[in-house]
View (cartoon, rainbow, N blue to C red):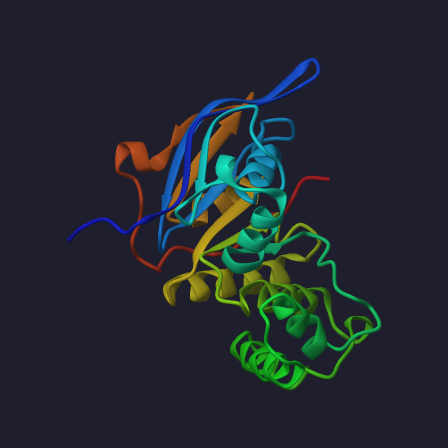
Length: 245
């Protein structure tokens, strides 16, 4: 069986700021259908990796290809279109509009799709049902628990069926029970075909996922794919460890 097409390709990627090299010659390939963790302590380069993969930041050197598009050849407008069509983002702090229902928060994920409001809401309702919030679609964020807010954020990120979902510390603001539920949801979405990268400092979360990419000092220090330790089953525990204060 041939390998799935690459959704993410980094080749010799460097990102330097005055006095700091955040990424130093990173090579990484993530193929369609993978579920992987980018793990490392604060300052390891994982957040910069997120920004580069998410096309929120351009590399200083090297090549970045996302969903078949060489980022270097795209204008800012084209990059915005690529993000809207191919990349879903989930953040630790949810970033939901407080005065808006769960339904319309998710429908907003389709604002740049060209679909009308009725169609956006129909698709949003279907995805909220999929993530277990079918009875909460008209609730506003203040009426939802932290775990439910994160489910809304995940629904918003995947409603447009992006090629890649980037989850940045998705359990960081949650208690252990809610965090476990969110990780189970990410595993379910991956089992249905979504390619997911989880950026985390939590070794327990990283070890629960099929592939671990360990960052340190701006470099990939270890990639479990390199030694064949990429699991293809869904039996792994998804219980996150408690995050350090």
